[in-house]
Length: 331
Image (tube, rainbow, N blue to C red; front, side, top):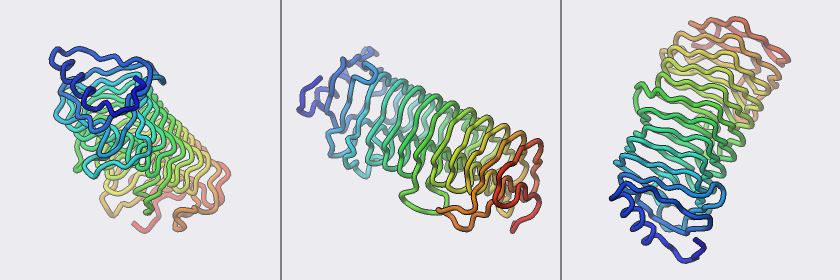
């Protein structure tokens, strides 16, 4: 550590040799400047938490893996240094088709794109900090089975945690215990950006016990999902709808959440796209303000549902507009 020269070639050789014998690699505290690393099929890389820093030297990408059996990262600071990332990479940590992933107790900071991008990956991200990403904190597409828990995701340009699919399939993902804040919508739009947690075309997902605040649009947004549970989350100061189930959803359970501060509390809508079957129960919704700065079409309502929804046992308080609007809407 501490050598200011780019150590990419030496680093590559070290990881390749360790992979041949399936040997873990430990990095002492200090700074390692590297670029364009392609990880081998099996890698276990650890360091001293908050003290071992892998810093992006620029000119391409930082950490990339594809068709790997095992990637295990722990105790590392992975610093994108806010430098340009090539078009071939989506994030400073960009992994595709990894059978078993573990990211634990890492700090992933200063990405010029997203912090972590996963494609067809199984595994977990836990007890880590992802901050200062220009795009998304964590962006997972076509996840086979991903657990994202007990992380801090903050100050990201367009989204916090996104779990997406190209077509509806069972992702069986769990997003729990995360603290998410300061999520912007720098690329604009009317809801595709600016969300703390966004699930799109993924089924059988549990979103529980997260603390989400200061999102430009929505704390938790479900879009074209099936059998998704949203339970026990604390959502504060959302710029538009705090908890949203929309478009071709079916089987949304929204229960026992607290919404404090939004332009609309909980919305279950877009029945024209085939949305059906939801429950909204046991929630506290309060302090819904008069208008949304990011979407002036939003109306101040505590809980809004068009059809096929049971609304029971909620407490709605301090709403500028209607407390509950049920069974009525454009669709």
